[in-house]
Structures are given as structure tokens and as C-alpha cells.
Image 1 (tube, rainbow, N blue to C red):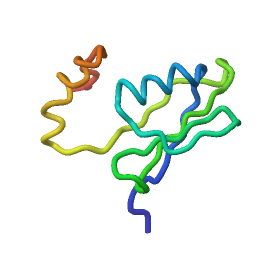
Image 2 (image 1 turned 90 degrees about the horizontal axis):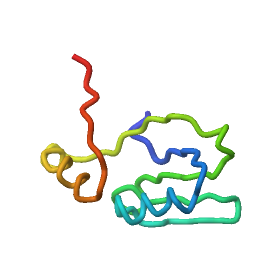
Image 3 (image 1 turned 30 degrees about the horizontal axis):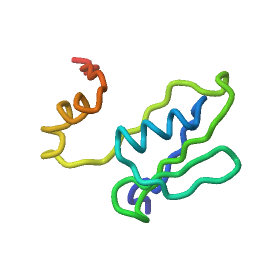
Length: 95
């Protein structure tokens, strides 16, 4: 039975720029990188879930969606936390 998601991969056009965002802005821990122009990051507890970044030609990079797991208490603080890191926050809810 499926209990969750262990890893997801996204394509990026500039690996170093994307890595800087996930490492410095969001604070993810690098788990692994190799010569195929990819890096993997731990999400939450080490060994539980990973995010993989793969550098691709810009024509192979498209809008993607994924969501990080968090708590209700953390959600109450997420907008100020994102703004402190220089990110614009927009409400995209559809009512």
C-alpha cells in the first residue's frame, strides 16, 4: 500500500541557480550530487523523502507542481517566513 512520496524530480534550466534557491533560501540539505548535472536534497527527516533537481535544456523545463509536507502550526507562519527570504507570496486559491 502507498503511504507517501519518497522522492520527486524536477527539471531546471540552471542547476547552480536552482541549488542556491533550495539550499540558501529554503534551507534544504544536500544529500547527493553527481556528474549527470543533478542534485538531490533531503526533505524533512534524513532518509524519509528527497527532491531531485535535474538540469535540462530550457525547452524541456515546464511549469511543475509539488507540495511540501508541514504542520498546521507551521502554515500559520509560512507567509512571513517566505517574505523574510525575499519571496513574493500570492494567494492563488479559487473560490
